[in-house]
Length: 367
Image (cartoon, rainbow, N blue to C red; front, side, top):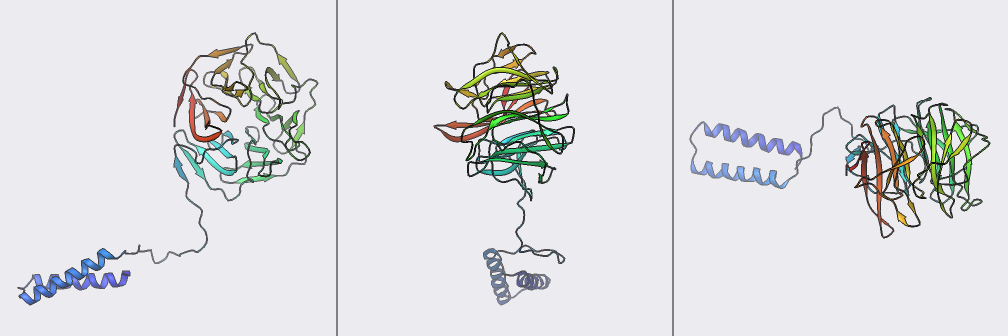
């Protein structure tokens, strides 16, 4: 039934009811009224009344953008995503992974999927970090759907992803490390896998810096050996970039290096974590600690947590803790905690994802 017919029938019924209640009704009149009432309720009950729209509204046939949706977990779960804290929006941004190029934000309690009009192509294992000097969230490289490494640079403006066109760029790569060096006010990119037709499984040990508009290759006298999936973070207390471990594609490493803005130096701590790749290294500003956790090696997935005190690695025996090498983690000043996106894999298949928080002493899971 349309709105006009519904209104007419309702109007007739109300008039009949109001008029006849004021006077006495004969038996025939009651029968007629009863039939009218029955017809009214049958038609209304069996018909779906369409929603009325304001007279000024215009119905569009164009495809509309889906509304942002909030949920406890990112669905579907995926490996190879990229994550960074956006100081402008005070949110954690997660992009892509596996065969996706979607954008998610973490507000401290839930993940919300955004639907920007402009997005980078599908990719996994890209490098992403916030450049505090230029106020840019930068995404670089990764591996595309064809298995070929990418070498493009993108920035997130809070609503859309915008492609950048630097005059010089690092060679295409995935699984590289990218962190902001506050001492030099530059992003620092190191290593990675040069996946592609000409570099099937080659790993790199070159160092690049981003100044807000262009990439520049650094020429250090000493560098760590070539590797991918290393762990790297800026230690604000020591004012230097720390790098740990990674893989040469044939073996995992557990060496420790520091970048002073122009050169790499290897450190030789008395105690150090076991060899690993895919671990996360994050500076916890709340506790003034650089925290290393998880990763994997030939023995399997790891779930241990270590803290760098400036000269040595100290293990924290805390349980439970996130495990595995499919982890992205950043420090959130708004929560004063390290936030880790953890993907659970069982029998070589993704089963679910979780969000973990480190408060400086223990881990706990949010989902």
